[in-house]
Length: 154
Image (cartoon, rainbow, N blue to C red):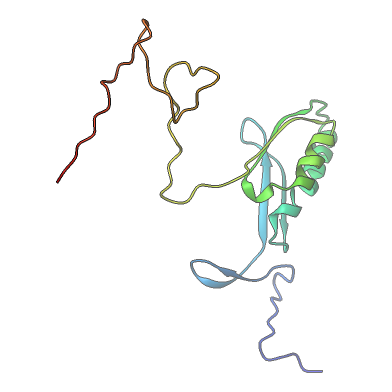
């Protein structure tokens, strides 16, 4: 049997595969990730041919716990953090149900390239006001702003 003309195989790294990239076109590679501690020391790492990162937190968490146990580390994982590519309802459940993870923080969205994070409002916000309808007030309760005026141009 002769393979199809377009079929390619990498003999030096058979677990990698050809992936379309946004900047260079097709590229032969694997998908790598690492887990680090507070001192940025790698405690677990993995390379896979699966390019859907949403399936990776559980295997990485299990590998991290196994490595910690092997090293004799009995402390829990204080904070598990992950990018938006790891966010899913299933992963949130896995992290919540694991007794060795104290807190988990997964990003739920991402900003576009030129999008800025909105600035925090200054001062105390009363419970009923939102940032959009808030007007700064002085200690006496009067507004710092002059009354709004409209200009009619004809």
